[in-house]
Length: 324
Image (cartoon, rainbow, N blue to C red; front, side, top):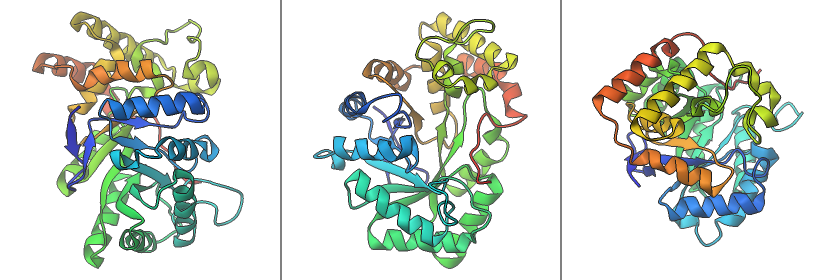
């Protein structure tokens, strides 16, 4: 396994991280525990979850599975998206974040999280309130580092400016949709992160499976795939997305790997990317994706992939999660 610094911090994270959105839903507790242990055994140390994943089941499963192995991982969770119907059941107010951190710590069976991330920008809470609350969490020892998620470039830069002005802890990372099928972060977010020493943690690195090449126009979704279990996902089946999946598959065939491995390997080579989180519903799927860490990519392959996906720098992001 290769390890990178998380942004400008001294924290080292595995080039491939484990996303756990499926824990407690598409993967039951037994399968999820097996996947988590296999990931750690293979050198993955970055484990990413959130308080809303599988209605909190993801955190609970991770907490039980990490007993005796907590010290082996960089554990990241998030808060800020909707958790209930009350007026304070979402957002990044001090009230909500303090409440949610305690809940996450209880479910994760730990007294600290390594990276606490604001799941999305909250337009109704002053950034100073959010950042001071996060600073208090860091000073209490319950949080080691802080990160953002789904922040626009200007929102991230404003937060960093406030932290610098007030002498508060800075965001060391930000999560964003980023893949060959969504290169929109390269327009503004990547330059900000390079300038400010913020690590990028891409989510949807395979565009929900489109970049595996398994979805074909006019054909039924493969059994067990995201599109079969969540029919609403087919809204992403625009011809240009499916065409890119086919083209990446063809290029992968030429160099003797899968489209998913090639797509992940390309993302790991991009500036400011610290770790690429990918989900799994089986140890076999995780093991397959681990090949991306050691896949050699020469300049010609990188240039070809850049050309194939150049149009995806423009337009709308593949996914973004915001408060409404």
